[in-house]
Image (cartoon, rainbow, N blue to C red; front, top):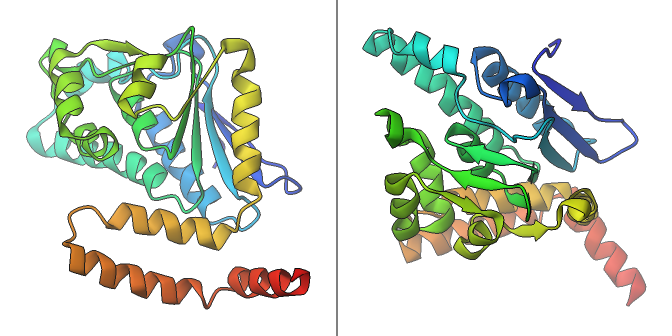
Length: 257
């Protein structure tokens, strides 16, 4: 795909790929093109064996302002069935990020609002600028509901604080997002890229298959009973033992012993 609304940077020599939202004049707001391109980029990188981790960044002062205003005006005139199909495309984009077998780091250098905050919520790791990052779900202010993003937010920070953010539509700082468990790292603006690079390199040193299986476990455990979760964990443990990475890791460990 020839991307027009994002930049994809991945050298075959590097285990780290970077996807950069590139509509700074529109505050990186989501429209059908950007949604499609994000979905495609994550699907493609997720299947690339040379990639070990993915950084999701954005150009400009805003990480992502949610839905494009022109797009919102358009969908307000759609039928229920048209809107359901459109919602499915947004869902598919979030799922492509959340289910990507490669760990995803969100580099949040500015405001992540509504659908933009939803994008951050499906990333494994969120590194936020202490001075400039903001997080908020503004949907209820315009008579909309944060339906799809709420599913991921509850998984990320729990029901009580999710209720707070979704119902008040307040914007919270990077430090507050960290306190809530939404952001995983907070860095001064001058140190943001260094922290992102540090985390990405840490991930790149790990086994790709082990991280993929771990992500799969984390994505599936929610809602399982204790017995079902433990039975599932045993099965995944057995699968991990058959991977080439595990066999190489054990062999390397024994050689050092």
